[in-house]
Image (cartoon, rainbow, N blue to C red; front, side, top):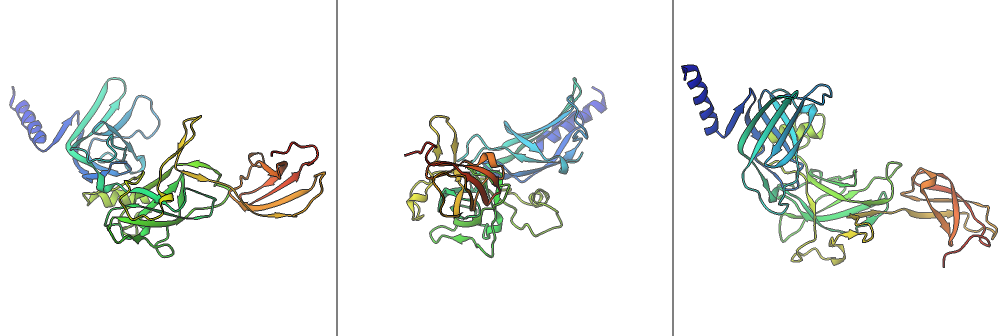
Length: 346
């Protein structure tokens, strides 16, 4: 070999010794954090060079990141030629720590060119970085209700604002002053968090999954304009990245108290659909309170969790259909049918 070839070979050996593999002009110099939630949702920051992300859609160019065998979803806005930010997927083993996993970056150009790099043993899924909900005061409520959930959260999380709860795609508002975090006496990791579910036209009745995640330890720090930015900056200097959580049945050895609140899961046998939480409409008042047998009278109903689309609301009064004419999230106007002619459910 030539001396230049020998130099390149020794350089490759040195990089392998550091746990890094470089090929085709792409390299990884650091990966932060080293630990994250087994349920995914950890913001992973990969430092290096030669990274790429297409400025415009191109079916032939792509860049992918994986942690072990699991994909890591790239956040384009915070990805440059020297830094990739991606969000981890859940581990195959949701309840156990993983072994040391490689972090891989692959860049594909056209039909024949590819670049790749690997950081060896760079990340572990970690059970104590994974929040879990095991209890709720109720698993069904109307919009605008104050909800209470309990479970296991990292001992460093001493404020409600560091915990994010979603029902479906909607955030349940956590206020550390109005609804402070409650820490149970027996174990510092077992905590209760209260939140206020929103109401309005964006909220509709239905069946939804509940999502929980550990947010950054100090969201007020730094000058970042949003959550992803701060998560990225915080994780650069920390070994633990936390992330998303899970909803599971409690093992039964806790002091949670109300056994009716333990999550056992719900499913529709006929369709196979499963869910955590039911959001239902609530009627609070009806005006007028009396009407004739022949119907034809307009009723105004006030309440919560109605659909703003009239056709999506089905109203009956004593089993008689009441045709919805107007609707919003908190009120309906419907025309009462003829009780003598309409079939009445008994």
